Image (cartoon, rainbow, N blue to C red; front, side, top):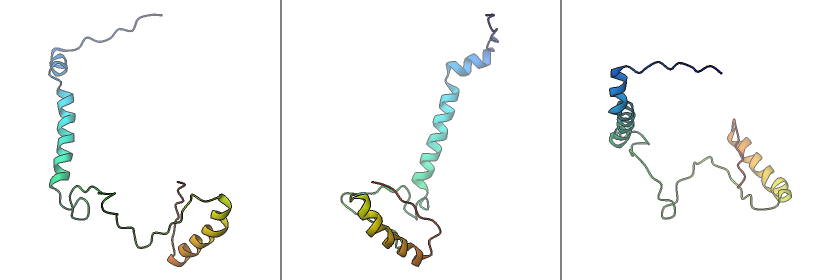
Length: 102
């Protein structure tokens, strides 16, 4: 198998590699986005960076959220919960429904 000739790096390319120019460009971009998120008060509904304090404070659920426990048997879920959820979604005029197993 013939060897592939790799072009020799120019002096400027070697300097960029030595001083890690690309790495610092990437870190600068990351820092720019993080500082922007810290200073932007409108990033999440006027709160800047927002973290849920879940065990202490329960998050607000959307007014049109419909849910049912899924830790029951498949038969009970299909016979009892599914028709009720379908009725609620039809009343709300939902365009889409997402079902997530737990």
